[in-house]
Image (cartoon, rainbow, N blue to C red):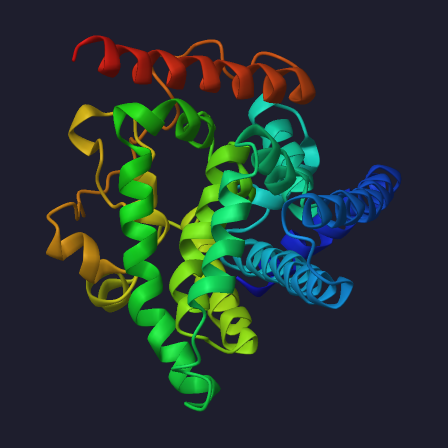
Length: 338
């Protein structure tokens, strides 16, 4: 067993060495993208709020810490998965192979996320609605109920309310109005850890606003936010891993793991709209928990053959626009029927 694990890491190191130029280019692209998105967000601040540079700098630094944390945690989860499942089944092999369109989409969306461009495009497409909502709540209703409570009390509160917000946010994404946006995430034809970053910019924009609202209103310490985002991020990244061995007490009482989330991504009708969250309790409470895992599950979109057929940039652009058109049709049909 030890030799197998050593071989897995050796294969990963060799493949990284082979791909070193491409990986270096990705690092440079992410760095440049973060710089450009910082300038863009500074302009948005000036147009919509006129806030001071100090306040903007704080907000951007917080988002920067989240991006750095997401990178570090993603690497950690990739390494743990490699250790547990071996080279052949690992996300690292799939992503470094860069062989299928689904794999390329995962890498492309991850770059968009880490550069903050995904959120920026979401603000632009929503005409700044999510951004202004975030700023208005922060300015008008910010309190400090948890200001003196201590970081770990705040982290406990976030773990109480955060997974519930995520559950309802995710459940809303599966309604007719928002499915056209969310199905980009479900279009992945194979599971990799970076599936977690495959999202439409509009959903990414409003997700950040919704997830942060109670934290802002109650004045939660930013450090507590980073701790919660880091630990919750580990769980949601792990949900997209390829480790499907049972974790009995963890998956029964605590978290919905990779087995449960694979069911959520299944094209089988009996699996639809199940396992919406990452904490077992909320899915159990609202009747969406499904533990009927099998090794015959197929993921993707059975009724959407056109996904994963274009280059990453073309597919991202086309799905963004198609999502908006479909959303407009849904809204128009509601108003026309009244």
